[in-house]
Image (cartoon, rainbow, N blue to C red):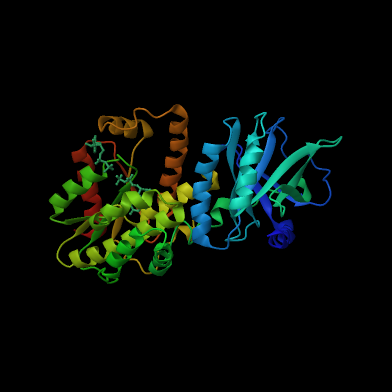
Length: 419
Ligand SMILES: Nc1ncnc2c1ncn2[C@@H]1O[C@H](COP(=O)(O)OP(=O)(O)O)[C@@H](O)[C@H]1O
Ligand SMILES: Nc1ccn([C@H]2C[C@H](O)[C@@H](COP(=O)(O)OP(=O)(O)O)O2)c(=O)n1
């Protein structure tokens, strides 16, 4: 174990650490060095007298890493003293795809040694690296101390490094591991994830069996395929139903009905597994679209745009500006997924959306803070929706009455699909 850590440490000189102290600002970036830097203090303004720690997952297995990272937050929240704040942290090579190792940074204002005990326990039993951070010396500079297990079960410091400021990278670290972690760009990539889960999530087997029986879809459909997208409560169900009737169309949705028994189960899984499930749902729906579009136009309630936009918005931490730039490959359409003829995104002001949610009896009890975080999340989803290409979505104002929205959309369909 110690040898493994040493070899890892050797690589750390090219890594940058990012800690999200505040979702509305940039993370604080730092690196490790053998000598202190002349530059200003790394944690100035964000740390007072707290004890600080970091921990991140060490495993070469992608599924194990995802499962463990997801469970770790729950475990930490349960076992650490309440004065301990858990912040998201990543270690990465600037602008190098797939180089991110996720972890947590702990700001501990408690007076007890409970945190050390919990971390020592984790180090002994789980695949984690643990470090503590100390501020000392005349110039009050920070250093990082990597913990190691001794033979007799005690914890000791294996290596000590100076913490020095690092440049802000061009790409936010959370954008470096979107491909094949949050968004899958081929059937095979998503399928492989669920295959690797069969032993730990038995429901994966049933999903794979359904997927194995899916219908193949052709590139071109005989009748137009129109996808309706938008955040929850923007009126998708209302519109897709009236549209289906008005056009004598067939109504489908993604994920399809046949996956409903497993949706809640996969919603509890970490992003890697959850997103692979939704990705496969699109291929099942694509098979149904191919079949139905031989006889009539098809209306689809959510499809690839939802899968990609929600996944990207969840994966990208912090500000709207952290999203990958428009034109980035993450907004591309999977080469093997049936493309619809038209994608429309229903858009509403957040006040009207809240009003509709309340009419439906939801979101009444949300705390202010959660509302704020949700506001940022929804902005990111809508922005990601608008950046997805091949086909891109057309934004429709969903604030008029249901009939006015329907008429507006029928006009668009006639214009774009010649129906
Ligand atoms: N154009 C509209 N104007 C006012 N209320 C609407 C409109 N469209 C839908 N609603 C109402 O808003 C709520 C959410 O609509 P729904 O179609 O269920 O949205 P979604 O399927 O996008 O979650 C429902 O109570 C619905 O009756
Ligand atoms: N085709 C789809 C549909 C939904 N999803 C995911 C994206 C979000 O995490 C949720 C949104 O689902 P939600 O329950 O809000 O959907 P409805 O508005 O009830 O249709 O599902 C997806 O990834 N791909």
